[in-house]
Image 1 (cartoon, one colour):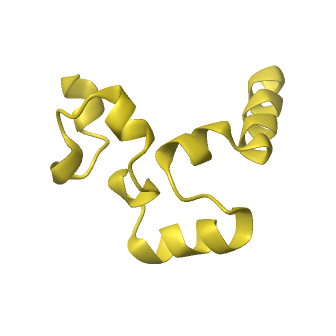
Image 2: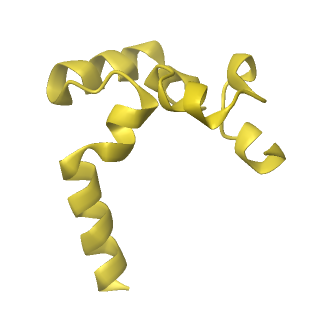
Length: 68
């Protein structure tokens, strides 16, 4: 979990995965509240789970992997 904690805002470090999945995307280090608002407006992404399961992000990740 320590490696994952480095990718989270301090308030979310040590939380169970179930809680992290339902946390706002701003819980991820590097995503500001403004960034979170843009994700909400553009893709209706509110939670970390929404981000991880968004079809556009999944498609892009698959394409990037296949290109390796």
